[in-house]
Length: 291
Image (cartoon, rainbow, N blue to C red; front, side, top):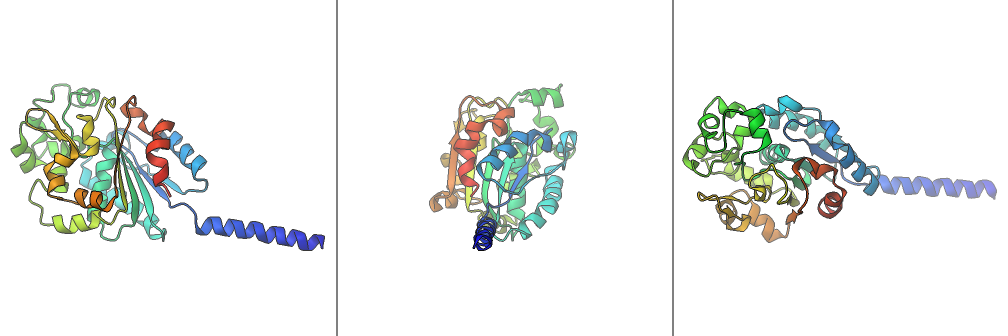
């Protein structure tokens, strides 16, 4: 009888493990931002493993640090090749957490990959509507330029070989942006894009879009760009639901909202470099979407 009891216990444990494996959490893919590497996400990995034990989390050492300045389409292809096998092995899909510039890379992947199985796309303080601001990053990269004259460099073929210029959006030179931007203007269909219908269909395969940002970010400018708000030509912020790309449902934001699958999470008091290591941000804006 004792042996029998132990056998029952073993089978119970085995059964519990099997159930956990079967209904386990979806794999999480993390894509880093400008000048980052996988080492920046230690805290976020810890948060995920504490709340959802056993989650398979992948952070890739691709385009790290200065290599993150390479053109975004090149980075899209590199990350896509690394992430695709994870998708293929995840029958129930995967989640994306994409930080800063990584959020734009993830949009490129989601738009151009027709069979992706991304469930939650969590965009963590990413300049989704573009960037236009004098920041420390800008001073470091382009010490001879300010926001008002960077268009002279960014909107050239040479400028478009640098990632930040791929999403530099000068509200005072929109014609030049539309004609020159090889990346963001195409993703937003602000520039004529023959693939726009297909890209929209691909993007809308996601089940949830979570846009996280806040007023004390200090890097993303305007901070509302993290939620698809941006400046008009007077540098007044126009919020997402008044943006042309939302109203015309250019790549699916309005559809996602109508489906009930578009979520904005704003948090004050968080600086740009702290979004992925702040437990309140994880607890409030991320954790619930990783199921």
